[in-house]
Length: 128
Image (cartoon, rainbow, N blue to C red; front, side, top):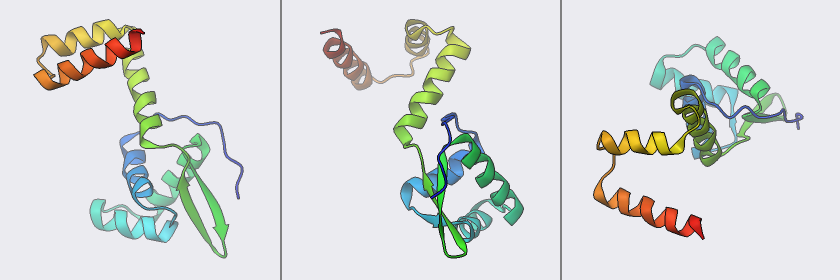
């Protein structure tokens, strides 16, 4: 198995396409990923190879050698990716203020009543 790198869990859109495949079904070989992504997105083999190399360097995927084929696995889960992207958004757009982010989302009516109730209950349990 190849040594895992330090993770940079911020996903680019192209990373997300590959991660969705690996989160759904892994391991997948380079050829399997290429065949699926070629059909869905029109990607070339070189695009898939380049992205897999970059994602391995970022530490968000890793591979194991299996004969002549590399089998790729996700090194992070969807929750870890979502948390990293949320933290990045919070820092970049809202100067690190979760209150500012929630206030903006509430003012823009981005939550249903049920979601507001759910957030309220989450905050009550976290406060304890």
